[in-house]
Length: 154
Image (tube, rainbow, N blue to C red; front, side):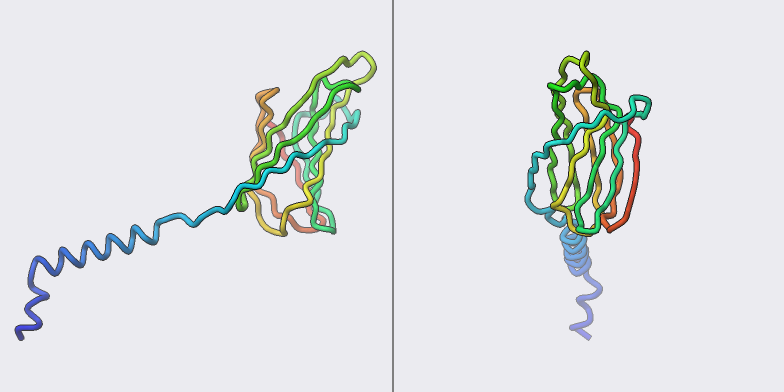
């Protein structure tokens, strides 16, 4: 009887509440995302169609790589360039577009294509930002052969 009397004390329930709070706190700690990997990707410029709105078009290849076509470029001539800075942290991808404008009197490019060959067949959260135009795009991409997806910029 004396041993069971501990269940009737305030101290027992205070200790029980502290242990429960510690378990909840330990369970709510987020898992580590892993290290950040930075990839600088050059783009292949194409004249494309000027009427197509700004957007991203994804195509997953059979070899596991992903082709990304950026449409709606403005002010990029033959001497211009477009590159992408791709930061991968776990399954989160942040893409920053870098544009070098040039004279468009000898032609203008409206599309840029680049290839991401470093992704595993997983679900990725992608955030694309074009500081030059102030446009952005966010989407979820499941890397699997044959998948095609398009997303317009805001």
